[in-house]
Image (cartoon, rainbow, N blue to C red):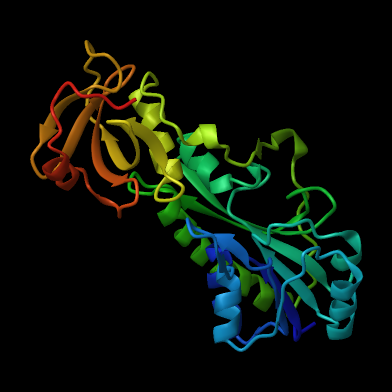
Length: 313
């Protein structure tokens, strides 16, 4: 069966690239469903989701229900009669009635190698755990979170330079390409999918405020992974001179010991600041002071005039 009518659901930046690919590949959605505009930033200005902004640029009809499973949305989807409903980080539970509306299926793009990292933070979790690889899974939506049959899965080898922001962008692009390949394949076959192995399921939770704080008594490897998993947003934070500062980029230097944790033990010109951890040292390369943009740690030192012996808390 040739896919003619699609509905796309998503909210953050991760959903934008799949939408772009759908439009460019001839699968332009009849409708985009996203979360309502929400207050954002210090001034709590009402801000549109990234997907809404993209959908507006493509002149696609937009629907922003507070509860997607209520009758107005159900009636709208039944009127459209989509072949497929496609979701990508929508941010809400899709109920059974909606899942049964499309002629073929309701499917989701998820940035992990399911059943590993079901849940809200699969990219953060892969980096935080020091995984060497991750990927994208496209699966049929079912009642259980991220547990449906897998229709497509592709791997990505994580590099040392990857952080959350970079990996989010890479997996969004990979997911978009995988989606189009799947839809083109679906035109000539009925893809049922492969059941997930429940014995291998790993779940990841939403980030909490305490997750952002760096514990300098931890190992250099643990802190390095935490920084990567949170950069550039929301960012791993520490306290310096009574104010919070985000550590955006760092790398492991040595297993040198003999200093209390969090002590600034040296500064490298044009490179950054060397900080002690529970089992070694890190070179802090990029930081973001409160209320300022991301900057090189060396540039931060030029303004702050950091002294060796000072401490991150």
